[in-house]
Length: 430
Ligand code: HEM
Image (cartoon, rainbow, N blue to C red; front, side, top):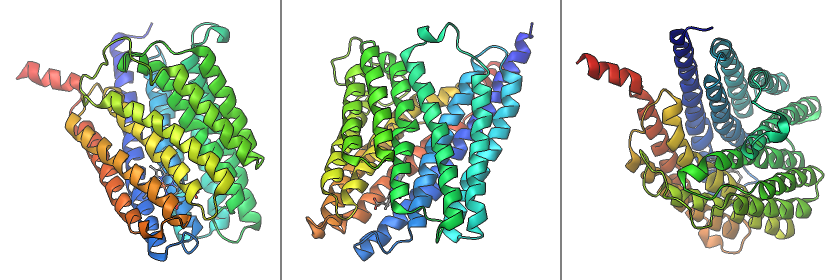
């Protein structure tokens, strides 16, 4: 039997590793992700066209956000969940660091290669191999610790999270395939448009969306006091989403986007997000508007899916596709990470409390406002419906950048505080 002190030490060591995962995600989010996104958008609105900007730079931004930020957070949380499994500590700590080193090197290399094109035919697939290796190290560690009970008894939230992990693995394999093909026959590190669109459908609607639905099924009944989720509707959401990704990969965009819409509707209904809650929300340590922002996020995923259908029918200049993607990435994914992340991550990183609930609101409010401004002006300006809205795009970018910076500051200040057990020890000795 392992001594309790040793177990505690393992848990603390794993929490330290998880803290580094989360800090790494924040770093990718800010500079390679958000600041480059703002730079790109200022360039696009200056030229009044996205065609003049190097697509490798646009893809560098998207990759840093999806893999560098969202992917890194998901992997960090995955390793954290191991700290709750007895006996997993010692192995997991070593694996968490190895996985982090491979993953971080891969994502950073991809970003730098897309920006500077240095030896890109070699570096592009190398970055994809490093990312895949980091993920496989994570996957093997997590799948080595099986859930209790037979798979038929597995809770729906866990099935969704596992489906999200499988989608993550598939996205990384597809990314490797696409980068190899590009380095053999491409003209630059930028993935050709059609292939990139299909890959993005898997990257955006696969692992982040499924993982968020899974974590929502697990936490929202408690945090928002919602009725227990409906397994049948969530199963339907999963099946519809998977079918949509397959349709998008095959280039059947109208079918794909319609299925994404049906899947998002089934998930929102199955989670009872818009139904009256059964119990009062649990908002200890976070801002009181937290439940409202979770609902706003679920509103955004539906908006994204509706614009997606419109894009499949009428897009001419990338404005509808871009707005649909932004409603998903910023409106849904980022709002959920800002809301749920600030609720759970302080505890995951050593039982800390959030530095400032007010700062949480100060980040969430401009995020929603900036996203609304961007989605409306991107459709109207890019598609030529109202060219007078071009100047609003950089404004939306600055508003969103403020939101991301405040979110990062709140989490960074939270992580810089001593963990609760050290705080208590300090008070006890004082
Ligand atoms: C300040 C916030 C942001 C700004 C200003 C911004 C800007 C942009 C711009 C200009 C594009 C090029 C396509 C277009 O014109 O629509 C783009 C694409 C993209 N963005 Fe963002 N973005 C932001 C936040 C995010 C976030 C938070 C995510 C993910 C969580 C994200 C993920 C993506 C992805 C995946 C693409 C597609 C890249 C590709 O073509 O491969 N963005 N963004």
